[in-house]
Length: 249
Length: 249
Image 1 (tube, helix red, strand yellow):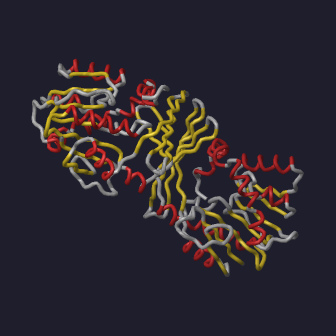
Image 2: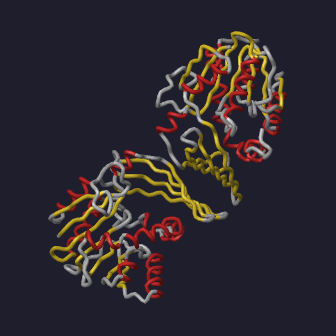
Image 3: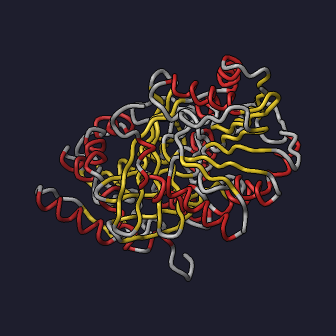
């Protein structure tokens, strides 16, 4: 971890972007994905599931509702506070842990692990990404499966748009992107307009395609790596904006 | 002309978006294009030039500064008053006329006519576009040259992006587009944000490609019409975001 603050450590980023990042439609999509996750991860309740980078619990909550034993890990306190509120409101027992994904490791504990919604590739040092995968591998029981859902680099290259914008949750979000470091990373600039307020953040994400993320998973010890374009198991082709990769310990 | 106000008659659209639409770079590009116009349109010191839909005078000002006799026509008052101020400041003698392009016609008065920066295709009735071309044809002397610059339909279809945005200081212009009428027109939704202010406009532009614009020009009487991807005379291809057509009376 660097001495200076990384972009994702700025809690204000998560608080201010919260209304569109975790808009109601995205909760609905997550809630309706549980059966698909079950099938891809080959799990039944009461299997123990790790949700690494759980955010406010879009997946952790419905998984717990389905009877899974969920451990939800994130480093962002206000997102965990929201998850805690939702969980107690619904009387769901979720193990909520505040931790950086580079640090969280609980050997041979989980039947499955998920890392959703592009919560991967955040670090300047690529070895940190490998550390995360090694932690996930160690935390799974033998035969346990990991599912990562992230932005699909090949689709991004094919469909690249330097600028886009959206209006959601009372915010205007203006996004500007640039492919950097020989197309291995994307530099993002977000301008958030809320009434007369303006916020601006810049951050980089490491990009992955099916082959290189597969290689990295195998390097971390996983086998049986399968890449898809959706949670329905559609092929990971140029139409796939997501890379859904499933690997087995 | 219809009874109700047409979208381009809303002066606030042009006043509020002008700082974003007419960037310093766009002014500089026009000035640096004068030499290319000289070659392409065979300008000589006696050439009388009509700039139809002149805006604030991106071309009219540098052409007048080079000594050409310029008649600058637009229907938008805020543009004409900026042009008047610039012309006075530079002690340039430009004839400035407020007129709708469907009305302006001065038979056999000009050696060269310009219609730049997608100032064509504004009207719901396609006959109005033809009327504009008939006016331009009539206003040219025999052997006179017309140069039009539009966004080509082929490039728009090839590289279509529904959304993008532009910023100048604290002013943002958010654009959202879709093809309508079997790809013959582009529906635009613009949102302007500045401080607390938010303004929105919706308008349609008729789209032309190289083939149909050249055919239309021949139909109204032009003897030759040549399409180019830039002012250096490059052939049109899908890389060019601009379409230039030169037609001779």
